Amino acid sequence: MAGPVYTGLQGDVAVGGYDAVSYFTGDGTPAKGSAEFAVRHGNAVYHFANAENAAKFQADPAHYAPQYGGHCAWAMARGYLAPGDPLQSRVVDGKLYLNFNAEVKAKWLQDIPGFIASGDKNWPGFPDDAKFGG
Image 1 (tube, rainbow, N blue to C red):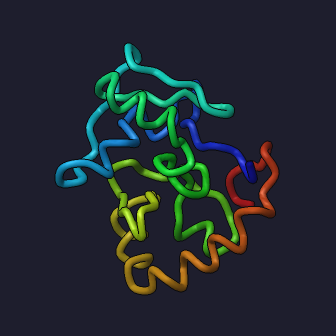
Image 2: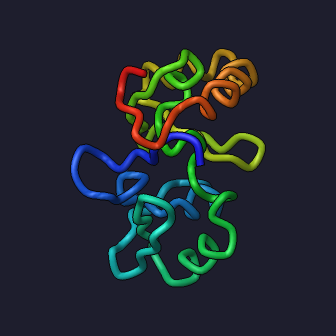
């Protein structure tokens, strides 16, 4: 895995405690997860709304986990780490991307393919202990 998974400033819960599978089901509205349905993957714990979603994640975590470890997709495209907000999300080509806030997401939406290409190029260069700002 390249780079660290963003788990907030304290603790080890990824995606702000939201159910990563919920972005891919129904209308894509993220559902809050529960520690009752927790799955450890890498250096992070993912919470899910139910056992079915936890099982889906366990079967294919690479499909459901957010890109760039849940860090901001726009920042990654520009070569640095910033926190991703689980409520500023977009699924593109079956992959989940988070952005820092609504303003940053609006910038990212202006050139999704270009920003994804840049982010994909930059992400492998981040070590597991990388810190915000690069």
